[in-house]
Amino acid sequence: MAQGHIIPTIDMVKLFASRGHKATIITTPYYVHLLSKTIQKTSVYGSLINVLTLEFPCAENGLPQGCQSLDMASTPDLLSKFFKATTTLGTKLDQLLQQHRLDCLVADMLFPWATDVAARYGIPRLIFHGTCFFALCATVCVYRYAPHKDVTSDCDPFLIPNLPGDNITFTKTQSPEILREDNEESELLKLYNEIPEVVKRS
View 1 (cartoon, rainbow, N blue to C red):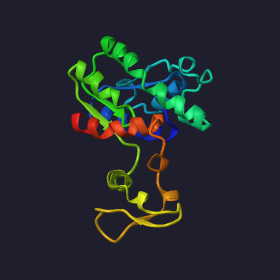
View 2: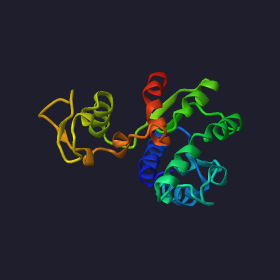
View 3: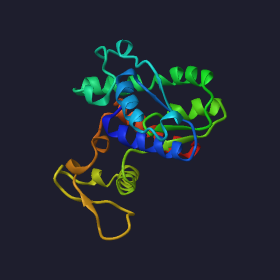
View 4: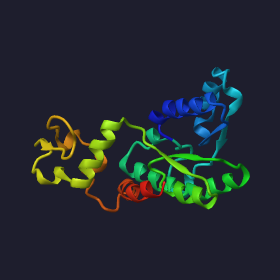
């Protein structure tokens, strides 16, 4: 549901298929054509790859019809509604898993509800992080220790604690927006706050 996750998703699916495993991508209708076209080009493993769709609840969440991709949520209000809409996909995934038996579920880190859905069917859930390991570690350290809250200006540097190697500094403006978010009611912040607990159970 985010453009930057399409290539790594396809790469993972091809990796599973190259090992002889059937792999299914679950996505919204917006991405079906792009994924199907890409999979057809993967002729060697194409027969092992399937695409299933979940209807994205646009209207129910105040989104314009067809707003099924993160890049379409072009304002802060739409972005909040988009993340809220993703939290309602658990029921739809549950219905899909009743019809299609899976051995494992790989779901985005921003879908914490996927862990509970997978648990109901007794299948493991792996978390997909769409970023490199260094960025992930840096984000965790900033989120956990909040060094950015000790500076007075968005341009003042702060040290990211507990990372190996040389002292690594950032400014608030260089940090991911989620870490600069002060609004506790933000849908993205609510999702992000659920991630540490979900990681323990996945």
